[in-house]
Length: 273
Image (cartoon, rainbow, N blue to C red; front, side):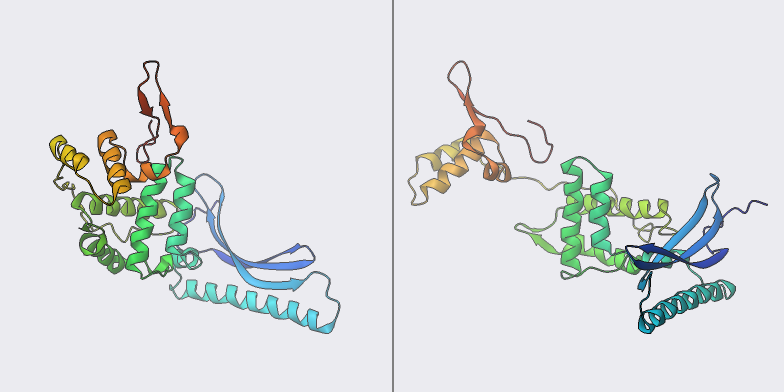
């Protein structure tokens, strides 16, 4: 009879070994049954053990025996957890994964546009700020963590202008919630720990602009920081952002058929010329 997986507890947990470059590698195979698509549903837990494919002395033979005993005891312990209804499949998959490390790897595999990857790099920056530069295991990301991170995005002074704008903090939290939902789809979480957080639509901050008359006053006013003034005026008149100005080279400037100069740049945010 075909046994359909429950996605919660294994039918069996067995030790596996493989010879690789004269060494023996060990793992524990958590077998959950058959998926609806007919394929085996397994989780391979690789162990930090190395044995000898061709042991040359008693010490190496003893190491092999000790490794196999440890692996078998671990497999037996998992089956004991199953019988006691204490086995948690998600804990097994999550225990070797780190939040920041995983979100970077996931975003680079998921997206091809620099702007999309950059959005998650910004989230990583705020996660590092919230965690004081540390990383944590994915298994530690719970409702309390998500609540506190959401508060951090809304209140922490993390920019030159102070706190993040309402629209920015909500955009980051929505993307973080989306990431966690993908972990549910990958069978790493049973449900998203941020599912209960209602973000809502963001409100953009009002912006203050310098008008042309004010720019002309600056242009005609002498200053000891003339290079900085010229840099600022160029950015203002051309509407090229500071980040894009920093990356510009002389080769980015050219003249058209009428002798007019223009700058040929790619917008960093939209990746459009």
